[in-house]
Length: 353
Image (tube, rainbow, N blue to C red; front, side, top):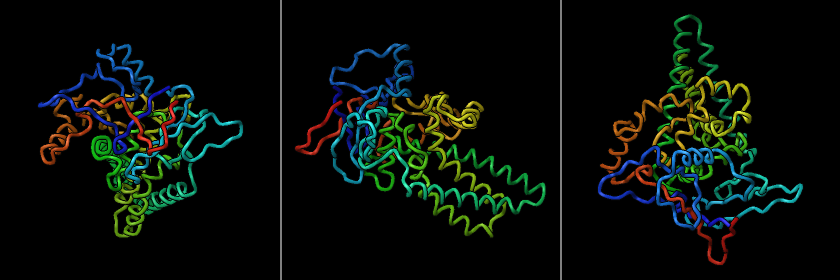
């Protein structure tokens, strides 16, 4: 029987490192955050390199079939019941808050599902139509070599910009705020849950996985399309391409958690070529305390931003600035807690699995 898990404000509880100075955690002795602790005492010694390797593999490999864990909705502001889905009888369909035990060990925000709805598909289809229309407006204005070169350069820089933006966003939701944060609360809670059960993302259907990123992109793309008659062709190409790769980063992220046998040949070829973030490249992020390798389009910017984990890295500098201005420490300055329990409403006992 596994212990229940606690999610303080829908985020991992993190135990501060000893004051007064921040202590760096050795990359070779970190625990992988996806290790689920039981109530037995935590090990007193750092894991061996072999144990660390096995833990990293476990972070990407789903365990045998197990019940779904349902986390509280951030909008409710209080902990809700965690439910473990029992093995479904033949022909039984999973409910929204539970999935069949035939599915892998999964964490969901209460009320979330793994399946795409018509609303999800509408957001994605609308976004794709707008991105494509904006790109077509720019392409239709290419009539000579200079404009063709300009449009091609715009598409290339847009692709690189999307990778950079994905890293900045990922760094932000990984390190600041919690489930009650306005606008981004559910995404912050979702990213913390992802560190605990990274394979959950591979179970989501496409539109279900990306529609939340498409929602803010749709009105932005619509505004760009309305303004397109006054824009040069390279600008239309840049805006449409950057927006497309940014919103699709969530799907590239999902593919980076899948085995080669689960991927289509074109996706696998793009990963092997370094055009899309690969399983190996993104695996470097899934080491506690999750302090680097945030970019998830291609990962091009990761080495540049991280500077091999030195204090001169871009995110380390930004963290010190934020801390000096607000007094708020990023989560990656502390070792995460592996005891993660969901508090139950009174009178509704936890179901363990």
